[in-house]
Image (cartoon, rainbow, N blue to C red):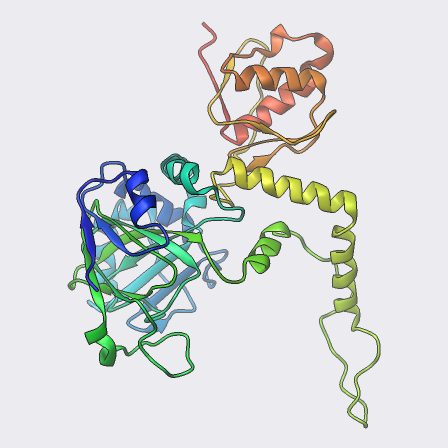
Length: 403
């Protein structure tokens, strides 16, 4: 099989010829949503360790093929200034050894980067439907020999945007080995049945989820790409439930401990206290009202995030005076139903249900009108002020010049 190369990109041709069908390489795409300076800033924010001896859960760093369990000074810093500075520091620090920096949930560390990705993929969702659970994004940077996991198959249809340097992707239309394993690190015996894509800055490469693949360095110079994965197969209920209960914490009154079996090899009939607590907490979340609220909130977040959820956390709210007008800067979406209800924007939902006066203000904002708190009846100002401050923290409204 050979790779199809296109010089112009449009969603109509893409969905008719390539979506869920075969890989395609677009050269020099004008509308790439990932610019190098912004990718570097998001890489810095997305690789901050929770404390000096820990690696963030969304990050991998490898030297050659060895996974690093402590960050040391391997991660990008603001003082590097750019990927140029980071690469020079890593070349000195690692004495030229190959390395890989992988940052998952990448879009959630930069609102501008997320916003451009959301706008870019709106064209695809118009044609194939927006995913009902979250689209993923991952940044790959380094001079690594090949993808840390080796040859593998994903549950995602993948779009790879080359940001910096040159990369090579190698594909197989079917699994090239017969052994009962999911990935292969040493794939030299299977090269003859593969085909490759050589990707340069500004290029967009797409491949469907069924293709086995591995990323390779095209030389000794580090390269950077951002991959966007759209879920297409396998384990969908698992990931939707994981999204639904993201952020919940089951309170436990005992350590997670399972008593030893008795002399006959039988375990106790009752669950250990910690597991029983977790089951009770999960059951409470499944109560009809709580479950409906949680499911509605998730649907609103995913919908207003353009499929890219979770997004960057809200900013710290700032006080809003009576005279400063605010305008909508992102789509606003209400929960279904009548009466007080939540609204969502940018992947976040309001912390409380919104009453009739605030609803009227939100409808004005959604229609593109500016709003001043001082123009509203005194009785509703406190609620609307709090709501507008919260929406501003979502980056869904912006302040305009009062003059």
